[in-house]
Amino acid sequence: MRALPVFFSIGAVLFFGLAAFSDGIIIPVPPPEAPPPVETPWLTILYHHVTVRIEGGVVVTHVDQEFRNDHPYPVEGTYVFPLPPRAVVQEFVLWVDGQPVEGRVLPADQARQLYLDYLRRHQDPALLEYVGRDTFQARVFPIPPGESRRIELEYAELLSPEGGVYRYRYPLDTERFSHLPLEEVSIEVELSGPSPLGAVYSPSHKVTVVRQEPDRATVSYSEHDVLPDRDFYLYYSFAQEAVGMALLTYASAGENGWFLLLFTPTQARGTPIPKDIVLVIDKSGSMEGEKIEQVKAAVRYILQHLGDEDRFGIVTFNEEVNWLTEGLVRASPDRIGAALNEVDMIYADGWTDIHGALISALEWLKTSGRPNYVIFLTDGLPTAGTTDTGEIARDVTQANVAGARLFVFGVGYDVDPQLLDLLAQENRGTATYVTPQEDLEGVL
Image (tube, rainbow, N blue to C red; front, side):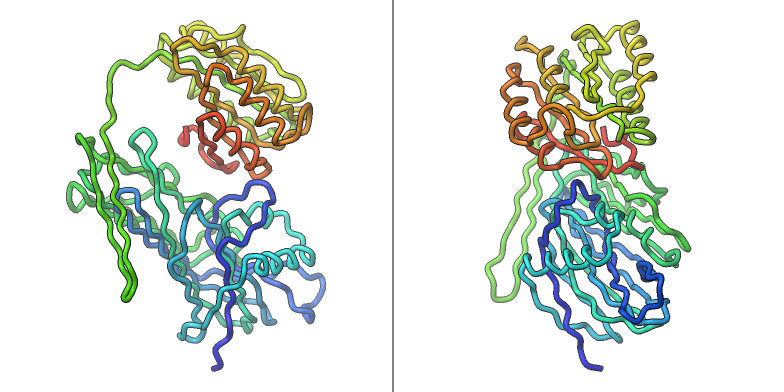
């Protein structure tokens, strides 16, 4: 059989708000001869095998999927795999009749045009939440009825610990696009590090953890006849030593090699430092339903874990800004109880004035020698008050005279990652994005 060409691109970019990082799917194009009404002819994913090698914070993920065309006509499409931030694709193979298919790299603008052409012909809102900023694409030519195509992809990424804990995420959510339930889905993680492993657990899936040695473990998950509806998360840590160190090297034949040397100093532990924290809660209409309940549960978690000497304040907003506390108040049991009651009564309606809410919250924080934090929980784009991204970021940063660290949690698929990333970066924080089904408490 003649080898069919495959075109692929790394970094083809579409920016439709926030996209969930997701595993690969083939976005099909119905053929002209398909009988009306023409619906998206999703392929059946026969199996989805993922093997992961983790050494400290260096992760290599290998994906093996097989797609079958169960329709009575040929189906072609584009294989799309949104990558984690800063991930690098190391290998891509499309198998046809047991033989690897030749491939060539398309410039990013050409790959992007392929996808834009698809969206013009077949508008599917579910796909707008799928395609992200760092996207690997491969053109898959017609798959005859009853035949299948196997795809292998391997990429590497570097995880950074927060509070001594690493978080690995492999998205499975898009397997809902399969025409039929998957016969098998499995993830196997080989985990090792420079020192004995600490906690190893998954809050999202029932996994089996086998510790072969103090510094090595295997984590396994497997299901059959299933349509996965949530992403896979794995948290792990290492026993604290004076200084942890790992050396990784790599060299291809005929090329200069590279090495990565990781130093991880131990975390000093002592009496917690009293802090000031302001919670800024988006209660606009787009938060209605599951998202507002996610946020309320996260706020309860934060309040219940404050120290006795901490101070907190709560700001809610839609097109108006409201204060649930009278400025910063001490985290005493009665104040926490009153705040929890106020949080229970929050409901979603109205527009979204991000600018006004953050400026108001920052007015409460002063330079006092205590660490200052702002926790910003939102799902949407600014739709009221000042809405220009540059103006919001500039004004919020200028208003942050106390030097507070701003931590952003974007909930759902409609957020403005450009704005939220900028707010976090300019104010010494981080931006974290969660899907509507994700456990926000676990992320916190």
